[in-house]
Amino acid sequence: MHKICMTEDVPEREARSFETSEGNAIFVTQRDGVFYAYQNLCPHLQVELEFLENQFLDREQEYIECSTHGALFLVETGECISGPCQGQALEKIDINVHSDGGIYLLNE
Ligand code: FES
Image (cartoon, rainbow, N blue to C red):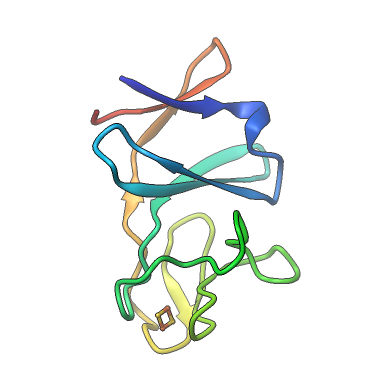
């Protein structure tokens, strides 16, 4: 298992970008104490989601937002609920929060 970061690196209702050992751009966010990870790739035009570093959430920090055309995605599932790729979804990454406080990728 490949360690991405520690839980304290990703505060509640914030997000952080990381690169996997295979060079994939991903990000991790926390909502209600649960961590979620996705590929940093908008299903609309296959571009990275953020314009500013680690800026993956909308102004209210309620949804994941693509900075290019403003698509909104549910934090828990990655489903696009508004914007040009409505009905599509971000690609979820399987992670595991270990008792040592580390967040690990399950498939690397
Ligand atoms: S590229 Fe993300 S909404 Fe268009």
